[in-house]
Length: 201
Image (cartoon, rainbow, N blue to C red; front, side, top):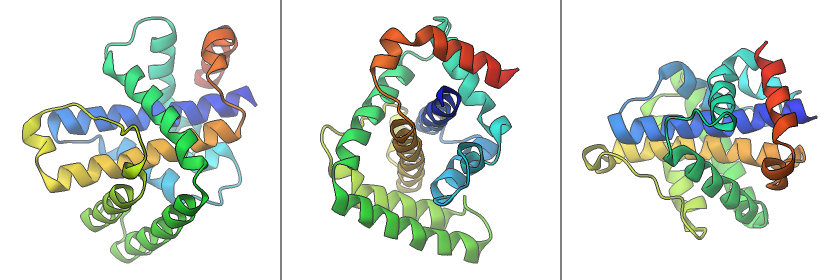
């Protein structure tokens, strides 16, 4: 079970690394972005690996986790952003009405993705970004994303960031459902690192 938790947590940090990249440069890694959005739409996946399209798709996130636990992370804002999203998940999961609204919005965005033939099409990103703005962004405290003001002032970039935040939240919900909690970071770090190494081998 801890291996599944680590995959879900890797999904969180991998998505949030893209949030940081988009906010700083205006560009996402196309492969990682697609994987993140796939995880939003795979609501009825048969396994945790299937949510992300296979373990290999989460390798960047697993590497980020390994670096963090070995104090080799190069982005001091990423752990803070991750903590914010894990806290956001608690508030989101406690709001059943919001959860239903988000579920319906994701299904609507999935139809757009199927019509456009791409889950990263601008219309899909716009729909998911609007969904996040209309629902999750009303929860407090807000997840604050820092970056280049030039990009953070562009509506399409902001929509993309919000869409990827939704993907990070999806993974955070999975992490919690699989038994993840804050105590792991204090008392289970060694087991978590061992699981990450096994998943990457």
